[in-house]
Amino acid sequence: MQCAISAGLAWLIARHVVGHPEPFFAPIAGVIALGISLGQRLRRAAELVVGVSVGVGIGDVLISVIGTGAWQIALVVALAMSTAVLLDAGGVIVMQAASSSVLVATLLPPATMGGLNRMVDAAIGGVVGLIVAALLPQNPLAVAHRYGRTVLGSLADALRGISAAMAGEDSAAASDVLVAARKSHRSVEELRSALTTGDEIARYAPIRWRNRGELEHYQTAATPVDRALRNTRVLARRALAALRDEEPVPDPVPGMLEELAGVVVLLRDELADGSEPLRTREAARSVARRTTVRLVSETDFSMQVVVLQIRSITVDLLQATGLSRSEALNSLPSLHPDSGEDSAEAPSDQSRSDPPE
Image (cartoon, rainbow, N blue to C red; front, side, top):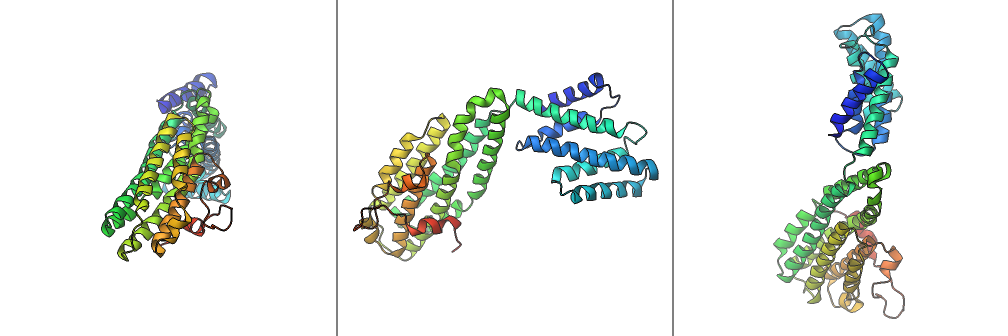
């Protein structure tokens, strides 16, 4: 609907208001400015105008001198794209320079319409596209909810799967969880892209200004949730190693992992409701309080790493609710009984890179 309205309005303005007899570039620019994907429309519209200007300028000059033909078209396209590349332009500018020069060399030769008119038409289309997007915007929360559910669902499933594998001492199930968890990176990138798009819509579309607060909750959670997924992959690897080495599983660990999965589901629901995730924060703190030095000291090496990763994931989830890292760490019991200070665990920082086995 946005593209259809933008194309029609751009033609109407360029043809009947500005008075251009063949405003071919106006509806095209109106559609391209909106684009299929939604991020960075202001930049895209500017790149569109620049690209058209480069292509039209070179096409008009060369075609008026050398005429139209196969080799002329090839030369014009090569020079237009080369000029855009030398300007250190983005992909939109380069491709628009190429397509505009082709149109000038074939359908719209220089004698038909002035180059300045074409540039004005491109500007009209770009501006109309942005205005239409501002007046008829997509709901920025709809995309955030969709990808947020996917990411948090993957995290909850991974934690729940590891819990079941450890409770049943099933190394094959733990391996399956690890394989599935490694596929979650793409959904995180899609969530980040959706949040960038949503932030843009909420900034320039007046009727969506009220959504900015709810989007901020997602933006606060995005990076910590990404870290939680990375830490969960590390946890899954160490759980698999512990099961293969037949290390004993402490009785509290499967239940704690199941509770962490419940914390993630609660975070998902509170973000979807648009409320500050205070219940998620308290649930995460409840798990954090049980990751004591005694639990760590009574386990073998791989299982110790599992417990420490539970601490790391808990910190990540607390940060996803809006706490700072220091505030989240203060929720953990100390691993140094002789000192009264809380401390961060070493695997927390190491696990950020999610190293291969």
